[in-house]
Length: 563
Image (cartoon, rainbow, N blue to C red):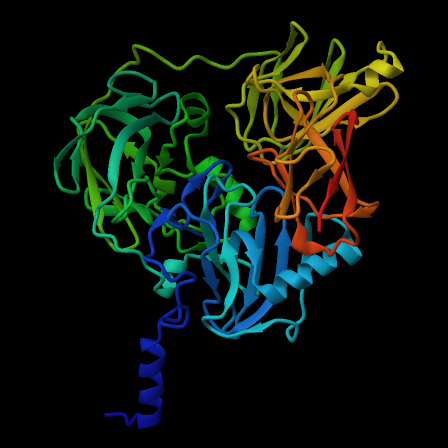
């Protein structure tokens, strides 16, 4: 028997026993029970959710703690997205991220305000910090929870990233865990005919099949007949203890006659690949029905790293006179699972109904550049804008440019250009390009203007139109009038709105000096905090100038008194 040194044996055992992710290293960022409104990797619009959303009991201003020793490496303030966010780099190779904050801890808040007033003179910013500027210890208060940015209600968005690669890692892998003993819930099942020879119940059409729950965590559908190449798709969600909201699952697996042919989980992914969610889901179904179906078959262009050991990309080839027992298994992070059983009988048949072929005048070869001009508009698609070859409908109707329907996912932005040579200079100054998919709520598209043409770039197909905005933004001071004493007020608030192109920018001053007014775009309210700056004297002049996206301007000037 060959002798193996004890030291080598011990080191080998130690290495084998070490976990991939450190346990008990990070604490919870809050000191209230961990109840989630969003899980890592959830299916969101054009991206996977990159963290966990922790409920804050409907409140703002809760203490937010450093989850481990480290230093504040980045502070970001954005109007949308994360809103106010803070990043802490830790010596173990990870960075923690805290978003939608109302404000930072006192020392950090003072630094940010000084930077904004003395250097940036802006309500937004992205500041990278040195290691010795704001070191923190595990459990230090670093900020307070809020509802800033793209938040739909008070909560803390929390992430853990690999500091070197910037890949996001599921925080639950570090034992930041909510209570959960509830299995996922299957909602619906879709069977896909993947080519012209595929048959599903004697048709060459995708088929939605009813499912029924037969026991806890067990779902079934009736047997169907099939032949050729097919795919499976499911709508499924998870619930956690103490919360009614629908969350994402952790993993999805498919077995065919006991053999695993498909698996993915949301352990980690990169921001650059997150857009490929539109190839994981049935994108057309989502855009048409507002319901996300996860496919257990992978298309060629889908290079997501979350897949593990797929066989035939998860496609199922059904042979004549053969029986198949398909099981789709959904699990949450705690291992609670639900199984959907799908029996299939292989029967060869002619197709009674087939898919309608796309045949329009505008064929797209994904690998080529395409440019089409109709009437007074031009669309230009760079190479690989589309993931696969397709046909498009293009037309102009009642002044609206219809670029197919927004049911095809795009990998890149394309350019839409309008000829505006027929308009006067005054008219052109008030024109902008808008997405008018929802006619009651046109959305401004960033419009670049040249002498005779206006253009925009977008990653969404659909309806676009040139609109005119001749109305200046509205400004309404809240809780104070001209010539009023407001000595007891802690803030100065103004409501702003615009019915056309939307608000582009604003400038606020008191006694001619720039002041920081933070904009809550969900409420349309600008807020100035009197703690920011000590005012000299009792009489003060407040001035606010607001511009919309075509530069219509409105100005309000108010005199107020304050001791």
